Amino acid sequence: MTQQEKKLPVPPFTTETAKQKIQMAEDAWNSKDPTKVSMAYTVDSEWRNRSQFINGREEIQEFLSDKWQNELNYKLKKSYWAHVDNRIAVRFEYEYQTKEGDWFRAYGNENWEFDENGLMKKRFASINDVAITENERKF
Image (cartoon, rainbow, N blue to C red; front, side, top):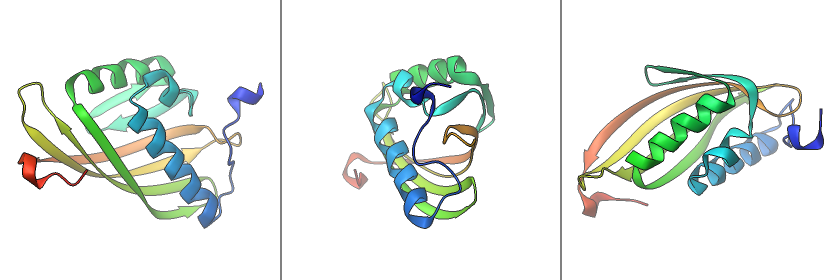
């Protein structure tokens, strides 16, 4: 394993390191760089995103590329919910605009599980989208 395959902080998490991990994820996702984001996950990472099942970094990159081509002006905010050992629960909301110009805010919860090197091996996300007007935007 190379140093690049280790993603600090590593479990077991404290409240402080769990919040650090959450902020790192928020920053990465807001970069809208699928390759950068995918490097925080194991090569065989398992995702459930809404009703879609995604496996491995290559599928993560494809999913995120498609996401950010369709969810324009994307801005995400994550917040700590709970943690234990190598798991973190996160609440989040993000806003985006469709190609047609409509705005949405997505609300959701994620459950994360990490390997011993601090790479996320499981991500389960439940997400709901709500139509908003441009003047209702928070981000």
